[in-house]
Image (tube, rainbow, N blue to C red; front, side, top):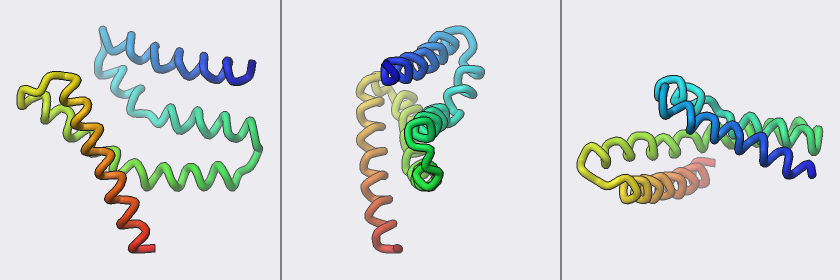
Amino acid sequence: MYFLIKTLITALIVAGISELARRYSLVAAALASLPLTSILAMVWLYHDTHDLQKISALSYSILWLVIPSLLFFLVLPLLIQHGFKFYAALFTSCLIMSAGYGAFIVIRKLVA
């Protein structure tokens, strides 16, 4: 039951932002740019474990992984502006972001 409640709350937030984007794209973008997924994950993790070290480790890992995820938001609009269809641009952006994650992980291992 608890899992269903978590899923419902999370889904309602995402669906709400999607609906809001139909009328107010800037407001929806502002809400979507908030680290809602991260915040919800931390709330659920804290509720489940009360382990502040796990929360801290998750937060620190998210911080570093935001960097390669920015590739997605850079590449997607560029591809669309250059005539890519939506799903092709989305898929390509996801691939480039994934490559960025892979490169970032390799670099972090080399530096650490």
